[in-house]
Length: 427
Image 1 (tube, rainbow, N blue to C red):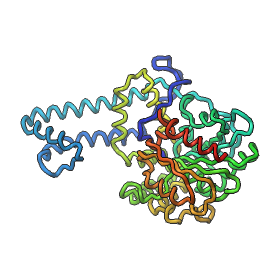
Image 2: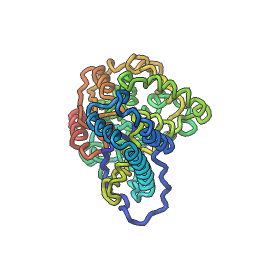
Image 3: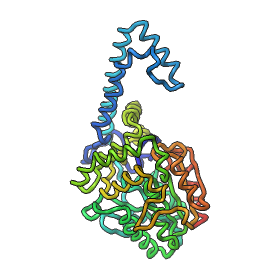
Image 4: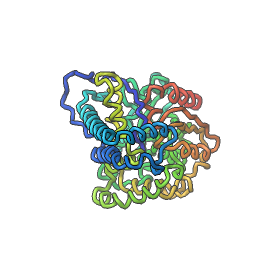
């Protein structure tokens, strides 16, 4: 449920090779994934510009109000010299296509590498690990961080200069990050109950044993829903709950998304039956459908950056994370697509964990919902519904995007510091 659409990450480059330094034996990048989809969308979008020419002076093309003045200028130019305009259009489409391919090649060959070492593993079960970021002093309040099952958890530990987990440790907390990894043979049969009532409870028990105190619980995106399920089961073992960009009312998503989820289940059912999981490229395709032109748009922007500058390193770091996602266990994919998205089982009280409904109204924990105002992955209205459903929940609404709240230059000031202040009062 996480996907890069902000273009705001600024992870820095400490611990990474600088542009122009010798390459090591790293594997070739596969992104942007799925590449055929991104190239097809760009080609169809730009190629249909020719088909739209006859309609420039009609009322059939629907322009946004801000573009109408420019549209009138284009229509006038096309009417004055139609052949010259058509030739210029063909040249522009060709130039943009070449720019896109060159930008993708530049990304794939970029020398940046994330070489930030993992912290020690406190607990492990199957493919799930609990990474211990340590504490600056004894008695530091533990914070159990729960990321999404789809994108890897190191979005909360992206680089030495952009790591929410390591920053929390410096701020006097004891962060512990759940690392789900890709489903193994056992996990391919998991549903959400197995992850919440099984793996997450195991991780919580490990934190309780290691620290001797109830941890603060923080979940990000889909991880927020997992954390909510855990909190309702183990309220007495937790100090507080923070939910970051966590969806709840899926009816607030884009129109037709429920029908699209049902169609996706039918489309990918054979692959899930065969593999036991929803493949990564299928997941990336679903996210790309939210903003189909975003892939080409952000890579054209990348192509204009200084290739040896920090902005390019930052772009590559985040894009590498996006393309380093993991498949989703088939039962979980069916619960998410067929339940959350297609039937809105969360907001309607139909979502169950271990047979019990997940009802935020029954939560009796200090709670905070962080709702990024420019989030395009989780619409703010969807996350706000959860904040309104939890008794006494506090709201924090930073002017950031979904990924920008954890991996942008303004994240520390606008999201991390208020979050830490809230956690400190309850730890």
